[in-house]
Image 1 (cartoon, helix red, strand yellow):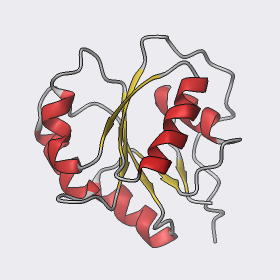
Image 2 (cartoon, rainbow, N blue to C red):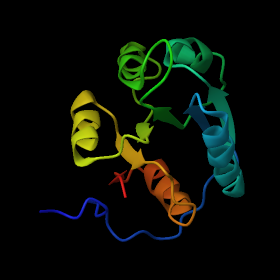
Image 3 (cartoon, rainbow, N blue to C red):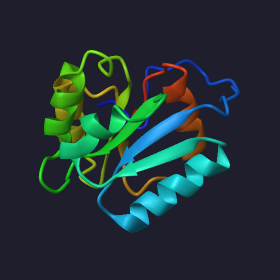
Length: 148
């Protein structure tokens, strides 16, 4: 059995993140969003927020630049899987990495996210000690599939 915290990525080098980096966080829980926003802010990353998947494409259209979407799976009105399909069908957004971020963190959920087309998986609770490096790796196109 494989350790779920091990990824396919090569050893990570400290890489810089541009001050122009923008991450859209799709999260309906205010406390979770505040934590994510603070951790992204610590990295110098600009953060935008939406509380539901149904408005993600429309909102993303208003952003001048978008580097990453962190998508909760369990959202009101439209879950993360439905929002993922809509984003992937929008020509100008289809190459934006989308990472599932969920409290339903398990091998099964990670497999489902991978099969659905997510570019990565982070289980909650997020680890503030590991999160900065996970985000750096994702922004440098290194896969991150971790749930513990």
